[in-house]
Length: 468
Image (tube, rainbow, N blue to C red):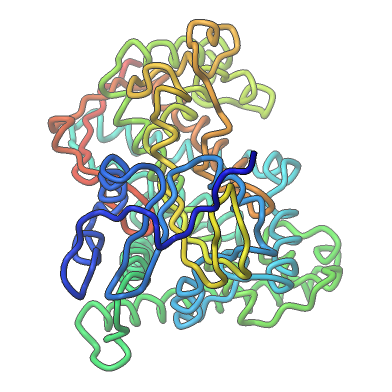
């Protein structure tokens, strides 16, 4: 017997305000937690409105998985995201749709496939060594550090080296302004996406002017790299068939697609934003948990000593693959603190998904974190337990549903950078645990989840103690 069709007008809704609806509550630094509270209030499917503009919110994993599978033909990313990014001059694989996305996706997927990630192993190890030396200095001076800022420098250096073969050395404060410009951009994207009116197009506030300055500065740097890469390719034709970085691949004559300068810039910009922010935030959250679980730190350390005990860092991809417990730590941090706890979608046609009738142009927020922290999918869901990810330990966990994890999206538009991000996290966390104990210098409850297009830990300060 068929279930009765669900219509959006019949969905429950949390209490909102007159005229402006739910915007004042949602327009906060922790909007993902606002959604989580509304899920508790209304269930896993409900509606909200921002100044009369309707949105559906789904924390239903079955609906969410199906919507992600139906991309890019039947669903797209929320069109306002594309509008805002294009306004900033960004046209790349992240915000492209339809045939345009297919043009961009192929070369991006190739640049970030498992073979290319293995080839970039030395890049990650090189940046890990640099950060390790810097952290040794912090340890000797008992310095309290803003771990998220330090890790962002690490991921910027990895990403710029892989994206366009440039040694930025943000780790050693040689490109502070570059990092500051990037830090300016994500919060403004987040703010503009949910703004009821594009007031920045009429009145330029201080932060709007700062954003324009940051975009102009990064644009200048990237176009300089593009020009330098063109010169390299002209002087070394062999690079055309064997590019050494993502930028050279985009410019290569062997490439099936002839990208415009704007598209090349957009893809490099996209890789920079995606590569530095989400990965650094995920490593930061892992350290947040590790600093409260010294026994887990010891297990990571024991594994590191067993795999590459005579060296400071793992020397090969084969050694990386042996760091199974550290990988489990990474998976558990991603489960509990996903940096992308919600995804914004829009229907390209009217259709029915799991008995929910979704008219064309309907905006849907997929809240994915709730399922990742539910007892029915993960036993003792609020416990930080890497063991749940090890096959030898899984029987002790009655419920274990890895398919609930949507930190890297899902379906055909699954994040192509997942393998690189996981490798960065595993290598760096293994090395840091091998050499240091972590002490959080603030109370755990004083570390706040903040959302600025991705979710990061605010006020996470760590002190490192060398064990060497």
